[in-house]
Image (spheres, rainbow, N blue to C red):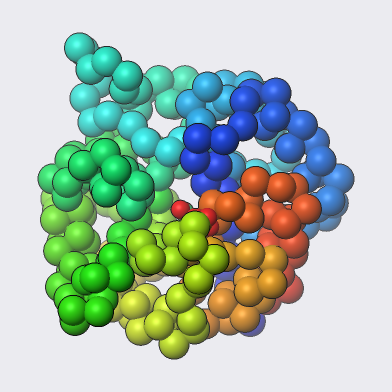
Length: 254
Ligand code: PGA
């Protein structure tokens, strides 16, 4: 049994505000009385404001998928922490591998975002993970260490922060990391987080992400050091997403 379990839906560039609204409606029917897992919906920016309204009275949280570290200014296409907060957002995914690899985000940018999110009262879902090349060439440990030490630099109060270990090779591929690989990586992540933050790092939940679905969620959640999931593809349908939440709920202590 586990004391806590998070299930975050990363919808990426999917769903309009209307799609999001009907998703919440369907999910609330499927998940009656399920309140042990902490469920976080991360829709695209354009659905945040509406989704905040749909989530009123529900035991679920709202997250964004990115933000800029500056408060305002000439940053075409970006949004600030204050804008997210005004849309009802509590969590924000930072350093997702798609941002790192497709949009060139570097550790120092991600670090500025983490610090800004925390000082604005948003909870970062800070993502780390190695590519297949990095794993196969024996560099996984070094990559995770650098992403964590540079990404978390200067963090004094990580209250509410979540970390997601997402091996790049497992994201959207249908090939999830196995329990042994996850346990090994989560142990490394926790060690590096404590190296960076000291004792306050000990309690930060570490989620796994990468091809989590309703079939593997039960066994992956049992892996040591796994406090929940960041789910992409399988979070796009209310049925599969609800099944994952149910699997997690089964292992959370009353
Ligand atoms: P996936 O995505 O579940 O589709 O592999 C996970 C993620 O990118 O957060």
